[in-house]
Length: 113
Length: 111
Image (tube, each protein chain N blue to C red):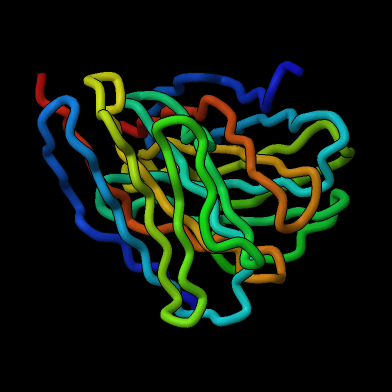
């Protein structure tokens, strides 16, 4: 079991640029979550997918943020245009089903200059 | 709305002592309560969990207790070691799909 795989691990870019974060959930898991973690706000749920369908995106901060899950093994979180306040660690997590243990990826540390 | 309060925010204990972290949840429909350990620069890792039909669960030096009536649950770490130093998060599963996380406890085990 390779676990949840995220890429890139680190991303540094200038404000205004498009940023794409990638996630491969654990095979067989039907629930996928994107979180953002900062010192000030802790762990925030951005969006939740179930069986590749976005169920709740109320945590997405602005229209600049979008997420897709084209198939069961891949999801992206895109920020366009990026701003310095988007700097954070972004985690992807998956679970076998609702109410089952979540497994987190190693995260993407994003810095917007 | 749904909320999980976690206390204390920081905790320092001497090596070998016990540590207790407490969480209170608001949604009475919550039925699953995981605990995560996050070391600096690493991902949150599940260390123990408990479901609402159980009052206590142990795994070696770690235990979790649940009081459904009072809507609170606690993490107990006995015989603490320096490698237990980390941030610990509690969470409550709302019964739909959301995991509501506490704000974290920074545990420091002093050698």
